Length: 193
Image (cartoon, rainbow, N blue to C red):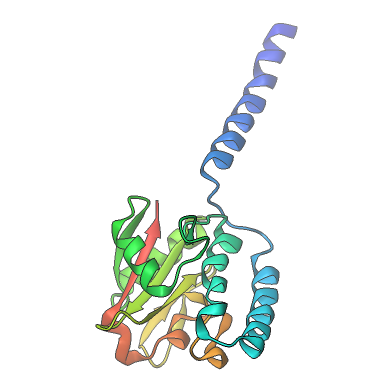
C-alpha cells in the first residue's frame, strides 16, 4: 500500500519538475508583473527622450518590452551589443525560424489569432515598414480584443515606444492607437513559436 501511495504521489511531482524544466529551457511565457514594469519603462523612455541627443539612444525600450512581457530577449543583438532598431527587427522576423508570419492586420482572423497566442504566453508583435526601411514595431499584450472605431475591427492591445514621436508612446492601448487606418494594409503580425 505504501509503495502505491508513493508511486501516485511522485507522479505529480515528476510532471511538475518536467514542466518547470521545459519552461526554463524555452523561457517564453507571460510575466505576471508586465503592466507595472511596462509603465515604469514608459516613464524611463520619456526621461530618455527628454535627455537624449538623438533618436537612436532610446530604441532599447521596444526590444526590452518583449523581454519584460514574454520573457524572451530575441530583439537583443549580441553582435551589436544593443537592442535592434525597427528595421533590424523586421529583417530578423523574416529570417528567424523562431517567428512565423500570422498575417496582415486588416484581417480579423489574424487579429484574433494574435490575441489568442498572446493570451497563451506566446510573444506576438505587429510591424510596419515603409519602402525606405523606416518603420515601427509594437508588442501585442495579453488581454481582450476591443472594438476600434477607426479600423472597424476588433484589435488587440499593444505596447508602443515611438522614438521619433514619443508623445504617441503608450502601454496597453489598442493596435489602432499605434497605427493609423491608412497603414493597415502594410502591417504584418508575427508570432513566436
